[in-house]
Image (cartoon, rainbow, N blue to C red; front, top):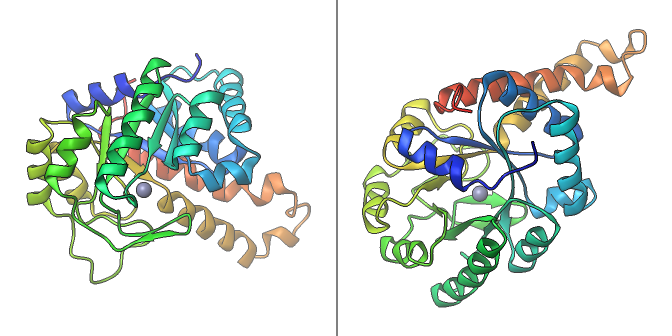
Length: 288
Ligand SMILES: [Zn+2]
């Protein structure tokens, strides 16, 4: 099975009141671990890269080939969408061209008219090629690939304007932030989420910064229309933690413990375990 557009899996999740996990990948091992977890739990999945992560790995085309080749070599049977996370206008165009099956155009740093104009162009082009599209209204708090926004609540009227363009799913700030959540975080704003759901005529919504939001809040967000949850930091943290323990225990100094296939194994196992846990927590396990 080759990569598929995210439209169908997101719409099914929306109707079924669960959320598709959208895991950011960083390299070959990360991608293998995500695929292993979703196949094991029969979860439809979105694998996504930021522009920076794709560059780090060797470019968009390499990512497309890597994901398609792994789906083939690992015998993956669940639907897998390959998505560009926080794409620029140029990045989204490039990804549509080289074979991503889904793209996010993040025009949230433009004024709303410019955001609408560019979003519309990306949506029309993507849809002509069967590629699904996510757009963003307002900023998401924290820092994503060096771009920082101050943490906001999206304006429901602006959300409606983008939803009316025909976007497939919409990222809107509801108090969520990228990266680690601070001690004094106010939590998700469910009133605003309900207003956005109403204003957009029940468009599937995306929760960015899904790492570390308490489970009760994630669950409630799903019942209120969130159908895609982005996970990046959480997998990084468990990978780093397991790798640090391996080294602190001196395992890299025993035998051939320095072999990358051994050195990276505890971190990889930790990614699989965390991804499995999240697939179940979002209600998406068993839905493929
Ligand atoms: Zn994000």
